[in-house]
Amino acid sequence: MKIGELAGKTGTQVDTIRFYEREGLLKPSRSEGNTRLYTDPDLERLELILSLTRDLGVNLAGVEIILNMREKMEEMQRQMQEFVSYVTEQMGSLPRETPPAFSQSLVPTRQPLPLRRKPTPSRARKAGQEV
Image (cartoon, rainbow, N blue to C red; front, side, top):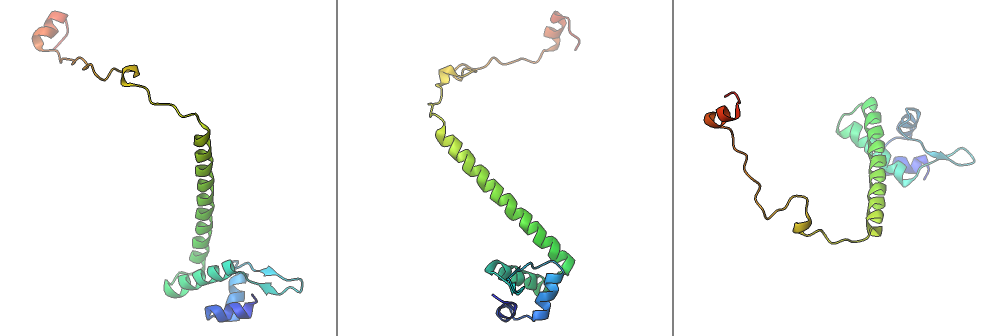
């Protein structure tokens, strides 16, 4: 869409949109005739900028920080989804094994472990330890 359409959809002035572009907050694509062309993601971004500035009173430096952090978080989320997909795929290719029986475990579970007694003064003297 052209800048006039974007301004009409958001209820803002064309000059305001151009100002946000000069500040680097909006980056529209350009036609061969150098006309600004805005996409739906550009519209959503402008609506977010307007909400931050008008409704929440965030200055443009704060808006820039918020937008950059948001982009980083979206990238991290994308990477995490790729990782989860990879792990899920790898887990599916592993052979299924039955869990070992309790008798095969490193520490037998059916036999109680011997209690370790704290040395009493009489036992400590017999063993030659100090009390």
